[in-house]
Image (cartoon, rainbow, N blue to C red; front, side):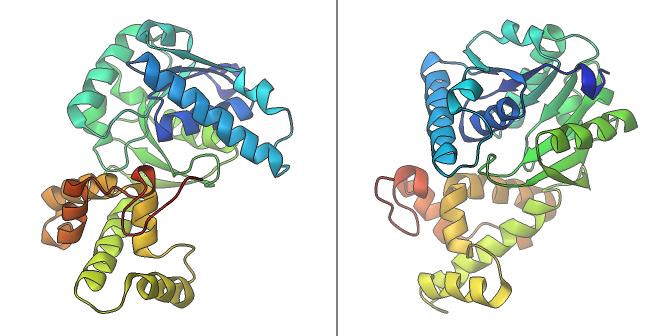
Length: 287
């Protein structure tokens, strides 16, 4: 395993919301980044998202250098072989076990043997993902929070065979990106989603059952528990499809207390996924 002082290039698999956010944070910390996705359109969209985010941060005086300098550290590609240059890789592909195992099997072949392979999974087993490789001891969960450039936290998830040195490296690497960490065993949902998903689903049920209107449910939770977002607002922010997928995974693993709320499923079927589609529990105009 390489020491943190030897890390120069970060590989990121996936140019979506989480992937491009991780790429942005790594580039902001001074690393070179290779961000890979399966289609040029996805790569370009990810790079555009990074540029827009950096411009917003610069306008608020939140960057220590020009946004263009940070953006120029990120190279986009559709060729997985380009990740051979990476000193550590963070996978942020779609939350599907088969997809992630295929990615990790390929990364095992492409990258050097001393490269740590991290997954950004929010609910899936790190141990199962790692078993697709011949170096499970070098695989760890690095669950960044959304939006990555804004949220301070990273959840370090320890698989069955993750080496102690890799766990220590993961905490240090996240800290070098300006993040604070907490550690979780490799159990369904880890810390955050194990607690968060039933909270969101119960908020949706309270709305659906007429306990209060959606604004008062969110307002009550914000004023009553000091959270920055209520459950319906947060669900829209995360994406109702993501909430549904996570809830269904936890339901299968942990039983009926994680059963997704009916209204979440109905909205996903209607294509109302939250902020990213302009409509979820609330409606959103152009930003």
